[in-house]
Length: 292
Image (cartoon, rainbow, N blue to C red; front, side, top):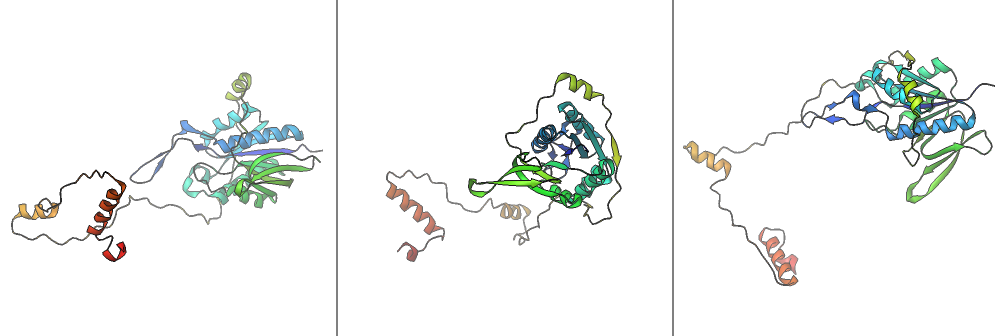
């Protein structure tokens, strides 16, 4: 009998990105990279399910070489094996979307392991947040899908999984998920276990397996250029007058008469309401007919 293979699909992201307020460009730092809370929850579910089903837990990511530190943390937490899948879209976010990530993951997993019994993902990533990758991955692997789960456990009969999903109005939905399957989980009360010190030291020098996947056949939309937003200029009439100083004063409105500010302290609610209605009538928001 073949050992069941449980895969934790992790996404390497910058947990503290910096966004340029002028251009909107996102600046990332590899020192702040890692897995999101949803992906850490998915890893813990994969470790638990692999232990209950007597299988192997593999942590995999489609990302650059900087993502290997995240995979070492998965090894320290108890993963039996890790794998990094490299592709052009894994290093260039402009070429990546949910469907492309699923293509890279399915191609790498199939080339490395063949049949995959269960894939557990986070419900969405913190950098894009579409949550479409698990659905695309299930379609490519020909597996059942159960998305946005609160809990995931083995079924009583031992032939599938039992899942709990959140519904509107505070309700819950219980699902029976057959295998093979792709499941995505929300970052709920499940937290990744604490790694032991010997496991952390052993994972620090571990070699991370890596395979490369060719670029897709196209279809993704790339960003050619990013420019700052420039609001349309307002066309104003030219000021009158031959003197430059007078024209400048007219442009700035320095000579315009404005009523001085008035502080009103009404003694009763009726006086306060009358003051408010008078202000609205004075500025054209109310008419005498509307008062009646």
